Image (cartoon, rainbow, N blue to C red; front, side, top):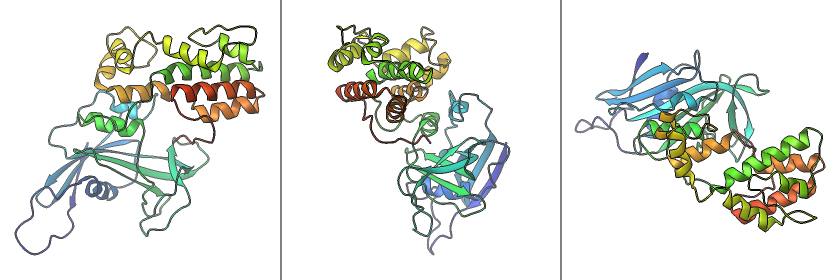
Length: 315
C-alpha cells in the first residue's frame, strides 16, 4: 500500500477553504488519480481522503481474479472516511461507442474500450472514479499522451465501486426474462457455431421454458410466454437471495459476494457471461440461421429485453 498527497488547486484570497471542496467530488478525485504514475504492476484500487492542503490518495494493488477486474472488489467495503474510490488499470484500447472528448474539446470520433493485454489495440491506462454521492468520472491515456474523457463510465467495475461505497448500482436491471433469453441464445449460437444450423422448430425445442409447438414450432408469442413461465414467478432479487443462500451455483459467486451485490448489479453480472443479443443475432444470420435470428428478435421485443439489430461493442 502506498500514499500520495495531491495538492488542491490554489484557493482564492479570503478565509481558509473547507477541507472538502464543493460537490461533485468525482472530477477532483479524477485529477488526483491522474497525477499518479501509470497502471504499474496491475489493477490498482485508489482511496481518497480530503485533507487541509489537498487529497490523500491511498493506492493498493488488487488481487488477481480470473473472472474480471471488477471481481477483485466483490465483497469489499471502503473505509468510511474515504471521499471516493477508483480503479486504475492498464490494457489495450480500441474504438467503441459514441464520440469521446479530449481535454482540448476535440473529438476522437469514437469512444474507447479497455480490455486485457493481448488485444490488438493501443496501449492504454484508464481510471474510473466514483465519489460518495455516486457521481462518476473517468479518463483514458493512450500511450504517452494526455488523458481524455471517454464518456460516462458504465459496467460491472462502476457497479463494484458503487457497492464498495455502500451505494446502489446506477440504472435499472433488465427484465428477469433476459436471463432465460440469454441462456436460450447461448444454446442456439453453440449449435450453429458447431456446424448444425437449427430451424425455428429446433430452436423452440431447446428453449429453457420448453414452449413446445406444432409442426412448424412455437410462435414468438408462445416462446416469450414460456420465457416468463420458466422463472416460476422469480425476479432478480429472488435469484440473488437464492444464490446468497447457497442454493444457486450457476452464478460463479460466493454467498457473501451475492449478498454484497444489489439486484441491479447481480442482474448485470448474470448476463455478462451470456451473448449480447445484437452480435448473437448477427452471428446466427452469418451462419445461415436467419429464420432463428428473426424469431429471437421478435421474442426479445415482446419481452422488452432490447433490440437484436445493429452492433454492440463490448468494453
